[in-house]
Structures are given as C-alpha cells and as structure tokens.
Image 1 (cartoon, helix red, strand yellow):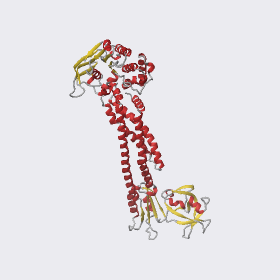
Image 2: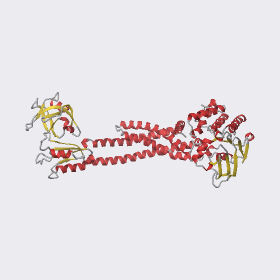
Image 3: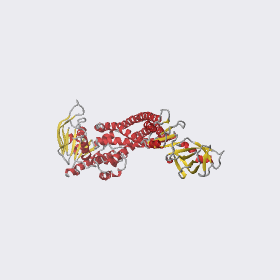
Length: 220
Length: 369
C-alpha cells in the first residue's frame, strides 16, 4: 500500500509557524525512507501526521489512495492499530508489564484474540533474538534489546507502514545496526496486505549511519 | 478491542497502580459503610416501624356497643356485612369476657377469662391440639390450662358466678392470632349462630391506610342512632402517623444517602483524575498504538469500577457489621441498592477524568526531549 502526502501543512497552534509548506511525497512500499533535517524542523511531527495522531491543517495523508487524515478519530485509531506500527525514540515500553504483553498491545487494540497475539508476539521476539526475555520487565533488559522489542511491537499486527522516531538515538553502534537491520528486513519482508510488496518504513533521524542505510531520504 | 481484552487490561492497570486503586477501595468502602451505618439504620428503623404499624394489631377497627341501652347493632347480619367489605381482612364479633374456672375443681379454683366469639373461630385463634369446638365446647390456651390446673385439654370449665350460662367442655388448645393476643390467657368458645347481638365488633383491615374509609363504611353498616352511641377504636391516627413518619424517613434518608454518595463520588473523581494525570504517558502510548478514545474511556472507567466493587463488598460487610451491632440491619433491597449505587456512582465519577484522558494530545507525552 502506498502512503502519500499531498500539499500537506501543519501547525500546532493558531498563530504559530506553519510546517512543511505544502509537502507532497510518496513513500514507496518495500523501501526505507529517512526523514532528515535540523532539530525542530518537524521530523517527529511528520511521523505523527503520517501516523494519524496529528491532523494536517491543509492537504492530505493517503493510504492506498484513501484520504485517511480526514477520517474520524475512531477510524484513525483503527487504522493505526491495524495498519501502522510505531517505534518511539525511547522505546516507550510499559515498565509494569512483561515484554510479551508490551509487544502484543497494538494487536489487542486491533481486536485480536489474546492467545493469537501472544503466539505472534513470541514468534517476533524469537526472530529478533529476545524471545528468552519475553517474560521479563523492560527494566530487566538493555536499551538495545528494548528497542528491538519496540520493533517487534510495531510489527505485531503485520502493518503496511512502520514509523520510527529516532530509533537509534539512544543506542550504541552495534545495537543501532541491529535495530536498523530489523527495520530494513521489515520493509522487505512484510506487507502481506499490500500483496507482498513490502512495508513502507519511515524513519525520522539525524543519524548519518541511518541515512546511509536508507533507500530514500526526505530532507525537511 | 475485545471486551475480554479490555477487562484484562483494566484488571492489570488496577493491579499495577496500587495506590489509586487502594484509595478507590477505601473511598467506596467508607461510602458504603457510612451509607449503611447511617441511612441503612434509618431504613431499618423505618422498616421496623412499618412492620409494627402494619401488624394486625395496628390494623384493627374495634366498635363496642354498651350492653345497657343496646340497640343490638352488632349482630350476625352487620358482622357479615362488615366482613364482606373489600377493605376487610377478617371480621368477628365478641361478647364481654366472663370468668370461668375448672369445673372439676369447682369454687375456689383459679379463674381465667372466657370470650364468646361470633364468626369463624379460625380468624381469632390457631388450633394447636384437639379439635374445633362445637356449641357448648371451648378451647383453652396453654397459659389458661396452667392457670386452670388442666394437665390435658380435657374436662370442662364453668362460669365462676351463676349467670345462666352453661358449662363448656374443653376439646383442644389454641394460640391466639394477632390482634387477639388477649385471648392467650384464657378460654374461647363459639357463640350460638342465632345469637341476637354481641357487644364488640373487631374488623381487621388489609391495610391501615384504609382506616378512614373502613371506619366510615362500618359505621354506615351499624347506623348508630347517635354519634356517641358506639365506642370506636380506630387505626386512623396510626395510619396518619405512618404516612408522616414514612415521609420524614424517606426525605431524611434520601438526603443523607445523596450527600454520602456525592461526597464519595467527588473524592473518587479526584483520585481518578490524579491517576490519569500521573499515567498520561501510558495513556498517550496506548492512543499512539491504536487505542481509540472509547477504549481509553472504557479502560479508565473499568479500572475504577473494579476496585470500587471490592470496596463496596468490604463496605457492605463493615456497614452490616456496624448496623448489626445496633440491632438495626437494613433491608436487603436497601443493602443491594447501596452496593449497586456505590459502584455506579464511583464508575460514573470516573467518566469525566476518563474523557479528559482520552482527549489529551498524545504527542506531548510521547516526545523525548
């Protein structure tokens, strides 16, 4: 499924500076796109707009040709749960629940049965090399492992779009490579709903290493 | 989100956020305990009062015609008419009690009162042993047997003075029914069906609130020649008292209960609001991962309802314990209603904080500086 922006503008509050200046861009399935730019230019904001958490003041966000940015909150939440995976900079794992429970969270919001979600979650954790940590708490794993768990969570519903906000920002080189490899693999391997053409992966970053690895670069 | 998963998430959330959960348990516990220990006791007192006022003794209309100058107004025909009124549960006539003694012992024996009853004797007493008496036979109470020195409900009793009445063979024992408790000290015997008149008419009403209409109807049947010819003991004032007290109790109870619930709801709302403010990052993450506003509202309300249910259960136990110590257990419907109301009030009070949480912008809490 193609994710696209058309003539998109955004601002947080009335009277504040408008961002993106009518940005139009097509994010191709199966490719990793790095969104780059100076701090404060709106990299994370662009991800939240693509992820339907924020609504543009002008223009559209389309997914498979459908204007999803104009949908009502319940519909945008459903699309977010079923079709969009998020990886946050600080992994944003719930410290009170187990790794496996964190991974399956989006699947529960998407209406999956818990046992089905758990099977899928365990499989992803095994693939990412953190299966043995499934019953641990986030405080008991390393930062690199936490970010790999966050990647698992972003993939649990087999989404067509994965949005990652500075996923390597707090990681050393080795862990950053591991996370990027996982995201690249996600771009190439997933996208069942898109007919096997792969997922659309968008990474907001200022890490030169990520920019080197990305298939496309969108400078802001 | 599936309801089972939503419930599971609510249980986990309530469990991991122990402080707000414990506070909700405590608040609802205090709410229920206070409601039962105050309003519940009032309800119990109201129920006891209602039971007393609604007992047969408080529903009896007694009309007496003096023997001297009698117009024979209370006779089989008027008794039958009074019994046929829609407001009448049962009606019977009686003559003034006379003293009787054990016929086998004779003069000098202990005396007990004996009442002649016109009508169905089953309306006045319950047969404990023996059989229902025919004309010239009588039933004796347990206390009467003891006072008459009767080992068995057998033998006979005779009037203590010569008054032209015959003896009565004792054929059984009885226990008086309300409101004829006085009969429990002596003997009852059926009056002849052809009796010309009796001195007293007892009309037991279905409902004390019908006293005014029933009194009017009975006096209409008896049709006394003068307003002071008959002596009337009516439950009318009882009924008025019942209405007034019920109104007072209800108003007081409702006001107090509303006060307790409103206070509890306000405090629960504050606790839930504080909880969602502390957990705004958790709720923001959920929104970003696909939880709709409805799911967030449902989650917050459910996570409040769960400890509220526990608190209500404990509160009911504590409240019943306190009320029981004062021998004023509230009615079960009041207790059940209080539990349901407390849980509902706690849950509803969580709606506003829940909506607040669901409409916050998750971006603010997801951003990492």
